[in-house]
Image 1 (cartoon, rainbow, N blue to C red):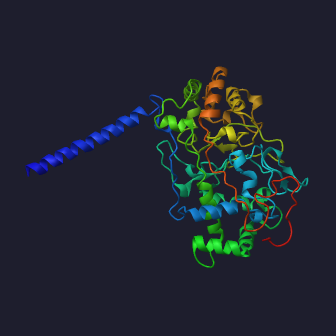
Image 2 (image 1 turned 120 degrees about the vertical axis):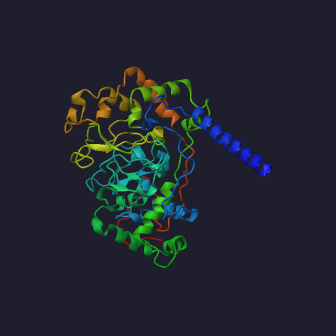
Length: 409
């Protein structure tokens, strides 16, 4: 009995020491501002991502999603793929203010319409897909991938649903090939006509009827979710490497907190995933104003990760550099700089409370431009896609448009 009590006491002491050590380590690595609210904190990204319960990631599913992501068979005229506007060369964004979808040729900043007036420009700047696995993550590191907020206006939740929306959208991938309500069925029928996809979907999802819109969304989402870049120097710093950031970057991090940027750009993704009215001007290429969420001119807070690879910025793509974004906030009180459809009193209170001074711009830009980037992300491009169409769509100059006829092999 005495020995049992001694063992129990020793075990309790050991457990206490472990808990205390973990607590001490967490406190030593907690670089959040003193007295900050829990929601006004940033942190390292998780090393691994979580998938929805009904769509677990597997290597086979990810590779199927990769093939679909690069296959223009998903677009109405068979000329544009997801990768046309979300290419690894541009950090899975594209370097354009607003996207050129159906009818476009070329890649990144050189992409233009192959035929004038075919379809309008895509209405908003293309988000990067990097780290969208963590969309919705809060300052405590909690998130639900099945309810992850998507798009500038939060119109859908989860990567599974997000992946299907461009297929139905006129400017992005549908074009004039079929009406929106028939887009998914049309694409599914195309995939079913290709033996390689029938075999691949059957292997991944099981059954002879495995190709449907639900599994199409799941495969694309599994690939997109795998595109993680979570080892920036900021992540290393937050995990305990005190030498990971330069003196200027640390100065910029503190200025980022002091000026109020952290009130909306918080959590591991540097986003509160809420919508705010900022009064950014519309892109002049659009044929009508973009009124944002519920016609309030509110747009979702974007992540600040990998900004060096994903310019230009804001929903309209009107601000080319991080410095220009900071200058916009510095001049937010100047009414004639705002969108004419937004009155100064409509601006989000958090934006009005920001205090960005000229002297803060250089160090904050240094922090955002360099400390938050991780260039060790997956850049693998499949050498071919099952449809036999050009990988990535018409992204090479001089490619002929594949607008007619059955899908090739």
